[in-house]
Length: 449
Image (cartoon, rainbow, N blue to C red; front, side, top):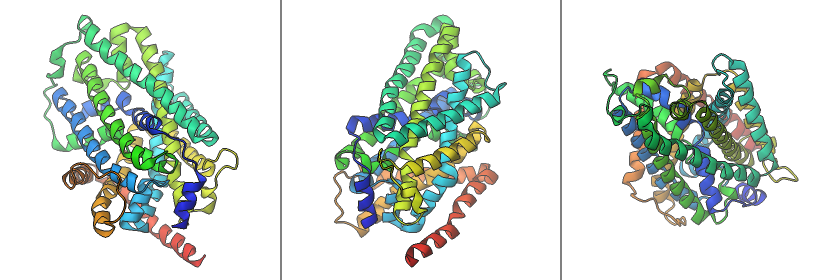
């Protein structure tokens, strides 16, 4: 299509393989691993079950990455998942994804990441973020604004910030894990913490809801696809970056949770909003809190930058496709970035970070976006049947079983959420479906033009 070609030509390819891998890791390791364990431990008060859920979440994510890599290599277009949905299922599902990104997904994601930045920043100065809620949220909003400005300046600048901060994330988590395993025993840590729960019964429904929080921590593995139009040699680099990044994240997350639970009993993890800071407090005292808080701030800010780099490309692709306001498809004359789309994402993120809790932001995000991931992965089956001649430099490993595992897992946790939290889940899907009449209007105007 002409619009797709135009989109690819107007956004230059500046991201290589390792900057793309760093982008996957940098976007994903943001706030979830430092904030979500408390909510997960509350729902699953058994350390063994909790660790198994982290492994299960990683396995589901890897199945998605192994599958989505095929589409990324075959359709290396700006907008990523939006393009896969459009080519596999038509314009309406693709538009609904973009609509959900606008009204729900991206603003909640940016808000959830930025909240952790603000909370850990205050904690580094011995200020309780709960008691100083307004200050924490104001800092979070400022971080979103700065990330938007950096990415308007250039995709390579946003990627550079993420790439540099990725090393800080690895350093922070490595220091935390190694310190826990080497020094923990002299500070009350014990292997029995890894097997001793509170004795409370485990409910399947609660485990399913905990998985939603875990998938928030893993989310980001697919965001590189949104910037596919700016990746060098995309047929080779996109699937490699997505898969290598995802495997790295799984290893990091499982080891980090082992460290948390080795130092802290599961009931203490359940009470710890800032579990990384509390773990370092037990090992090094106040100095440890300041150190890890600085690393977490860098981590969450770089994830914020990566998300701001990738997600506005969806709005850009929709507008460039004639299904959204034409203004959003504007490219900055000097910096060659979709600056209007970036500003829109930033403003919406700032609005939500000032009005919703961390749990509301993250749960809404997961329930809104993962069904679209499943629909995107399922497009593999449809495209292999309808377009067998489509060039596929990479074919999904384990096809057709691996994609089916991913799609089935997403369906299962969505059903569980509908059963256990029908009101919030129902509202989320209702908001997505309001995009149908908007699509009808937009498509009618496009045909008229």
